[in-house]
Length: 140
Image (cartoon, rainbow, N blue to C red):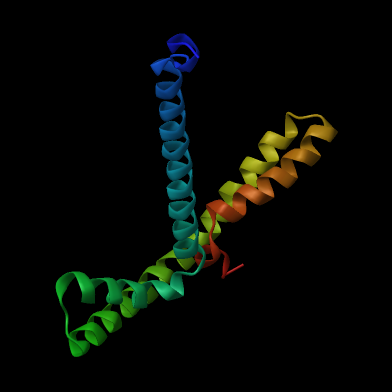
């Protein structure tokens, strides 16, 4: 066998670099998508379960500020008291919000065809749940 037969064909470095770049980009985008999903899920959890917020905030402050157990309980109690006050404010604002949502739905529906209006009503119902989390829906 001659030397020429034993030599491997030269590979292009460009193919390897393209593969590495594609692998990096795939990891980057999938990691970003996972992070966005995690943030979105956490925010929805806080919005739709506000009763859990004082306890979670107190736990976070315990870790970040180095609170002892007594301080943590005091902070949690303060947060719960103010959350109740804030919820009472939402209850006062709720009738005005309901009127605005109903006016929005009615006015947009008035310019649509019946088929479009039916889709709009379904779409708006989903949006309204997102715009008015349970903390605002409880006085309905």
